[in-house]
Image (cartoon, rainbow, N blue to C red; front, side, top):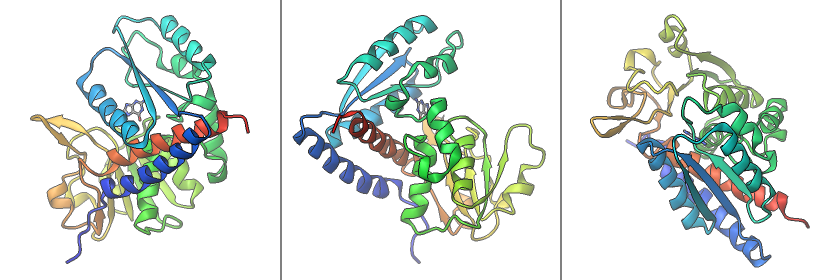
Length: 285
Ligand code: GUN
């Protein structure tokens, strides 16, 4: 039997190889793509995400700088740091690792990032472009793009498919719904207030679990042959655990992403792509 695993490490490696080639070409033209990651505090989850981003930067030749700020930093302080980075011509990508502490207004902080350097694709300008059509997606959010690239790599058609997304975050659920609609899928978005989520997941050709609730998608919630994408990454007993009960659901699904090694590496690879895109667009011809 052939494997039904969607291998995020394999697919991300092919993207990173292409990114490395593009970085080399930019360096030849005297442009060193530079990403600045801002971390507030020392959350272990954020530190571990950033570690992956730094490793991928190193692999591809992107200059990645990490700025660690005290957890008591104010919204105003953060904005003033971002404004300096906006003006710095050597910086091509600015990423503020989320979540930010409660006292910081994350929406206002993200709004301060120059849309041309918004490599997370979280800025209203970039989200608005994504809203218009697939053609206008440029600096689009990395996890949704990673999921779409993974489906494309494995030749899973999206047009006409019924997709149920569980989770409506600004980072994953909401932008993914738009990007899938841009590609002619029929999309349902469930969330914490949805009654009987299983009524929606059972009908879906593709189920995307992005709720941050470990193993909430059980085998009885998916139809036989469904494609299951797991965005969850919660530490349970010190083990990274997805939102899908992988052991049982993988026996029913035609294709499924593992955790770790599924969506996570795809997100990071798409971030690297965005840094290169930003560097190219910011470089005068
Ligand atoms: N926190 C969890 N995922 C992400 C992400 O993709 N970008 C940022 N900036 N923070 C995150």
